[in-house]
Amino acid sequence: MTIQPTMLRPPTPRPGWQVAVGLILTLPAFVLLLTSYVEPLYWTVTSSFRKLNGLRLTEGGDSVGWDNYDTAYSRGLADAHWFTLSLAVVPILLVLLLAPAIAWAAHAGGTWARWVTRVALALPLVAFAPVAIAVALRESSTRASYWLGTFGLVVALAATAYLAALRRRTLDSTRSPIPAALVVGGLAVLTVVAVALQDFTYSFIGGFGTRADLSPARLMYETSFRTMTFGVGAAASVTLLVPLILLGLAATLLVILPGTRLEVDPAAPRVQKTPPVVPWIVGGVLLLATLGTVISGLGPWLSHITETGRPGAPSTWVNTWLPPVVSTLVGVTVAALAAFGISGLRPFGRHSEWLLLPFGLFLFVGSAPLALRNFAAGVTADRLDSFIGLIPPSRVAIPALFILALLFRGQAQRREVLLQEGHRAPWTGVLLPALPMLALAYVATWLVQAQDLIWPLVTAAGDHPTAQNALVQSLFMRGGANAPLPYAQLLPLWLLVLLFLAAVAAQLLYLDRVALRVGLPERDHPPRT
Image (cartoon, rainbow, N blue to C red):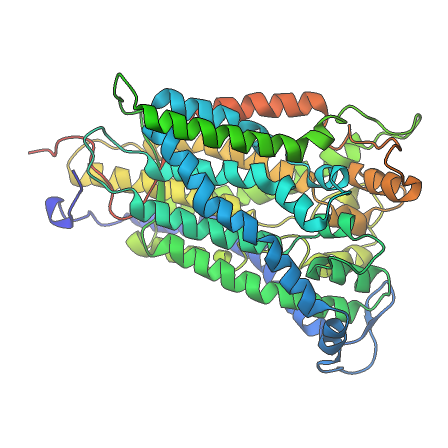
């Protein structure tokens, strides 16, 4: 039964403490947004119109107008954008065709079909090592290695999201899953395009030493850190930032306007005793084909995951995995507080989610477009090529902020419905279901930052190398397909196994109960009379 506004009592006035605490919890995230996104954006835009010289990035002379942009386009910036857009073609097809088909078959097949699908797709979720994958697939073209290397991750994430959209609150629920599935598809397409636009790893590994397969991020890196024309690099960064901000705006509106939210259901709905055969057959065929492609993409590096490279090479484990812990703790904690302040306490009622809009503008902005500003800050503070310099810039973890905000929104709206019906609704019903998602946000953000390539290349190519530096250096100094490469410290086997077990547990025990819905909350109990 779907709730209609006329079926509920008028909402009670929001307590003043709830408004005040909600805004206070959001304040640290806004401050960090200004310092870690807005100021670097302003610096990058203004620098793109100036000539910056030397490692100190000092301004040389007056403004050069649009000369930096002319130089960037003369070096192939337009072709670089078209190249990165071409990378998104196959992933878009995956998130619009293959992933929803797998999710439908798993959903229609019942509980065991869902569980088998979730377990099967856990490996590509945790085997996130783009540098290792790109190096292992370097004999293929950059497009082929990108499509193969990201195939499993794209399908697994999209299928998990579609499963959340298909989930029913109760067995007799009449809510259509189509609107939620359309929202998932729209967000997935925007994400795929944004990630492809910022590709640096596959372009850098596949086109190292040549002009082939140039991406805007790679052009920014080469013009800035090889030819020292930082103004041209800033111009290339700006051409990335503009479409990313527009994509983030579109994604934010797609979250706010339809009332998109996540809800954690107390228990899985009962299914038929005899699951239909057709979904099992369709799902089995699609899953086998998907796993075969995943193995072809991940197999070349997983088969070398225990290799340590040349004997006597120094360990890079500490430099690779510990610095991202600091930035992860700061970014995700601030994001979680803001998410609860905005969508948990809901200081502005049903208009509270509009507070997400400033953050949403930078939802898809990664490390590459703002790398120049962060490098300049590191030079000024004299912390480059040091352990402290390895710590990624502390920024609001905006993807974590959005996911947690959607979850708090769903749980808080459920609480409000209970209160309007006269039921008891403690705050634990809002907070406790979000704790597993918060833990997943910490782990995912840490893993993504630990596998980033551009920041270690920019900040620590000397006495404090990371596993990424060591792998790239071994590849391009020794050459040859048979040269030993240090894959082991990039993602140790023991850590991969631990992450895989954690992912399986999260999929079966928690994510299987998470639903993505749009519109008004859904009642799962009779109204109080």
